[in-house]
Image (tube, rainbow, N blue to C red; front, side, top):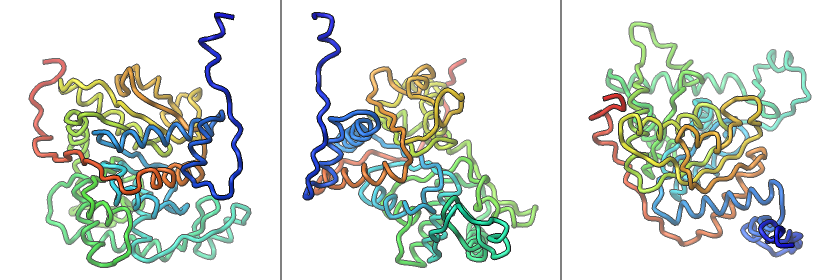
Length: 344
């Protein structure tokens, strides 16, 4: 039938099992299947196109990814400049600091008496354990580090750049912050107070509270988005990092720096859109706000991130071996100047 032609175009191809196939080959073949396997393969293709093109890549990191073993994966992304700006929860950055200082997270179980864990001084993140006393040592490092800085308001980017520099001096063990410091990747944390970093800084006496200029972060990310030839986003989970990155397009437009929305968008999430929360909202919904371009390349992978992310990044590492990326300009000089507003 003539009406069928626009629907029936490409057959599903069963995945052949080949013992010598690379991860890149597996992920590519998943693109010939269906459901989340196809979406995962499409996500790898979109990310690869971002890297090969002139794109400023924003990466939103939510969920307990570092305790779950994703630190070295994140270091790889930063060192190889598969991302340019990281927006993270404070918790992931705290756990990164913790491991960079030499402490560990431990495999555990969710089938445990949590009152017994409390008595033993052990904290639980689903099936990951951590020792409370060691967390306190990381808190102490953050607290002491804050007193090495001059008294003035800091953007979170400045703060974590300086902390990465300090950690790189202390240890050869690379984490997110040390790798970002060395590679020139910006790190932002708009909800820093909602983490052990915020708790550690709260231990300063009230007359000497450490001050962050979060609004300057808002201006910087809008400035970077407005200046980018193209912008792309990768979201692990949702929450504050997801919205903070997406709103950079809205902020830029409010400042009359006309932007079309992010050209590339991929997210890995276990959340659903029908509850109305941002973590599960679709990129199509974001188009109504102007956050995502009308003709964007986008995909949502409905999968737990510790499964999907290592597959995608491993595939990219094989596809892009030897590729030298042209890096975007991440200068934020002039970002704080607002020359015009949408209501002017």
